[in-house]
Amino acid sequence: KFRYQQMPGVIKEKDVDLVILDIHLLGNIPTNDLAREIVRIEPSQKIIIPTTYPCSYVSHPLGNSKLKNYGILQKPFRLSELLKVINQ
Image 1: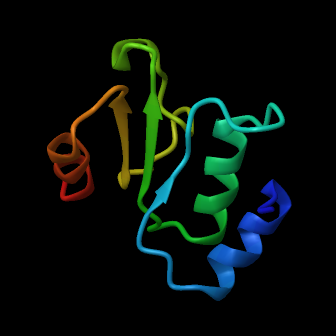
Image 2: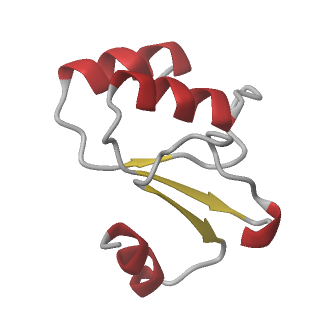
């Protein structure tokens, strides 16, 4: 079972192309906190956050940060929509 605490180590040790973080993570882990930690470790990491909330209601995952490699994707979505966000 993968744990929140393992993510920083995985990002450091592996060449991760993309991180997909659901807005509702198991165990009430704050998605924004995890996204901030990932970007602290790897500033250029691409992150996609799928959500059932309208995209206009979801704030930037890192507040006023200058993170550019992220996307918010409203569920349900088609594979073509996911690919579009990945390729942005």
